[in-house]
Amino acid sequence: MKILAMDSSGTVATAAIVEDDSLLAEYTVNYKKTHSQTLLPMIDEIVRMTELDLATIDAIAVASGPGSFTGLRIGSATAKGLGLALDKPIVEVPTVDALACNLYDTPGLICPIMDARRNQVYTGVYRFENHSLVTIRESFAESIEALCGLLNEFGEPVTFLGDGVPVFGDRIVGMLQVPCSFAPAHLARQRAGAVGTLGLRMYKEGRFCTAAEHRPDYLRPSQAERERAEREKAKQEK
Image (cartoon, rainbow, N blue to C red; front, side):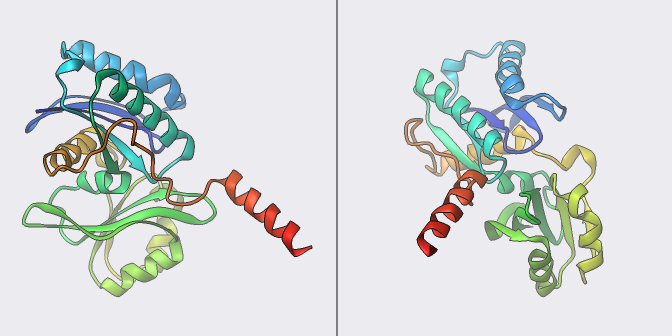
């Protein structure tokens, strides 16, 4: 069973091919170019290097959100276009679930954090039990202060990862009352291999949709939507 996986939900662009228990190829770039410049060429390269006939894949796994609005739209459009062209289903993998998968069998709690701006992070709380990822709290957006308060209530060691760590790491250390650590560089960002591995499991469980049905999960309104709502509210109050 083969899965083509991709993630452009954050600062990293990454693509991979997963076949059963093997990661056949993974291409990850964390640099200044936009995902619209990198994602398709990366997919083309791993397909060429592995001599893969895209018609033979079973599904396309994509990090469906939360994350950067622009990044999610690029990943979603890429997955949707390939899915429609190849007539393949889409597996919508929650971004922070896939991030948590990077830290396989890490003891204690795992807390991915993505910088959501406005002093907030996109996050979730996870742990591994019997070698399987268990969701303690699924994806949500929250202030860093409220997140630290929640983690203090659990009273367990926490490992953080994600692009929110450089932004909020010092504040986390100051606010947490439980032991904490931060994932090393090679595990700290999105990896399409994790999206593909989790996507393969979800596909086997029947958790997928058609390319036409696929929509990214933004989790909260965009800045443009918030500003429009504020303008409409101001008009109503006049």
